[in-house]
Amino acid sequence: MALQEDAATKALRGLCIAPFFDAKKFPADAGLANWLSVAGALCCVFLLLSYAFLPVDKTLRHYLSISIVSAVVFMNLGFIIPLAAQPDQCFNEITPHGMSTSTVCAASATSLLFGGFAGVMWVFLRAVSLHLQICWQQNVGRMFMIFSHATGWLIPFVVVTLALVFSGVSFRFGATCHINHKNSLADFWIPLLIFAGLTVLFQFATFGYCIKVYLASLADNSASTEGSTIPYTNSVVTLSPRQAYRRVRRVIQLQWKGIAIVLIIITDVIFFSVVFVFQDNTIQDVKNHPEISQAWLACLAGAIAKGGSKDDCLKEASKLVADEGTIIAVLFLLAINGIFLLFLLGRWSMVYGWIDLFKGLFGKKSNEFVSVDARLDFKNDQRSYEMLSNDESGVVTSLPSVHLSSMSPTPSGGFKTPDYYGQTARYNPPERSFSSPRPRTSQTPWDSTTTYARPADSSHNYYMHHPYHNRDVERNGDMNPLGMNKI
Image 1 (cartoon, rainbow, N blue to C red):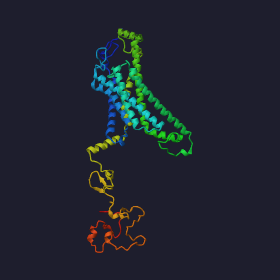
Image 2 (image 1 turned 180 degrees about the horizontal axis):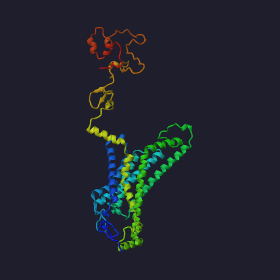
Image 3 (image 1 turned 180 degrees about the vertical axis):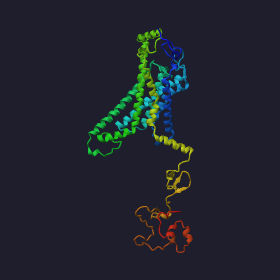
Image 4 (image 1 turned 120 degrees about the vertical axis):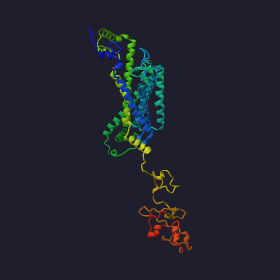
């Protein structure tokens, strides 16, 4: 005798016959994954804006990091677009919408597939870069950057285009469209898994080399290499095991965040690929071999006749599809990649950089002193040693200006500046000076206008207006090295 259901249970069934329930009556875990994608996208947008507007010393931006963050933004858009549009997933009673009947489906699937494949490509390129630096001591430069951009964006574009043409996409789970089973192995999953596998190989080869170097360093007791530091560009052949270990350790200390990013994203992608490939193959097997589902169909027939519980046929159904919890876990992992990137690539200096930026835009600028010789050619500007304030155009302070009064003429007609700041000053006598112990070579009459001496008939006026006059000498009676250059 069939058990009578209460009103609450009937309300949950909606228009569905027992033992089925209306999915709209229950909270969707997949919807929570979409909201996590929003949080991850906001984290990535913060990183990209910081890379764009803050100085490089605040962000330590690099094209490999920027490209990975951009790829994750595309992947998050695959969940955000249907969350904002709330599309109708069904074309009719038994057919879901596809990319030809729903623009939301086409846009979300394209973003998801392109972002996922681009993420795999850029973690592959980061793994190659790290392998070249650690294992082969190669500093990747401009050519590797050009190669990375060409492959990191072009290959995902080509693969996703082929997948949309030969496989197509449709609503298969939740509000986000996914690639159909037809031809999906050849045009999307196999290329994706090839690059993911290569990434794993490069990463484990790098780890193997690091372990080998570490073990070799433990057996190296050479005293000559204990305290030596070897430059990064030296040849591997010339390095002792201890020196090679120190070089590898320095690189890993600088690149450990990149290594973590590679491991996290490649784990997510491989998990995602395996789960959905398994799901596709299982559904295809049921379609090609209906006898596989006979036990489940028989259970459903009995449950409908008895008005039984919804749990009666779950055991038989679990053999035909992937576990719902596993699929939910995949979506969650894909959604939180942006949050992981913020923790690994974000820096507190970015926050301070934004604070300084807003202070400069809306608040008072800091009273920072900058040397004017960073902007002017000191050979052509007499103010080349002056320190100027950002807030005022006037001179704040200045070192003694190099003027003619501090120079001594040389026989060649030029001038030399005495060094007043050293322990001893070199004496450079003028051409007609008698201070050095040497005999006079001629009896040329003395002309006061050719020297710096005071003429016999001079007045105070001459002293005050003579270009080489030094007031400190007149006032103090002796030479003030720091004051003799004042104007």
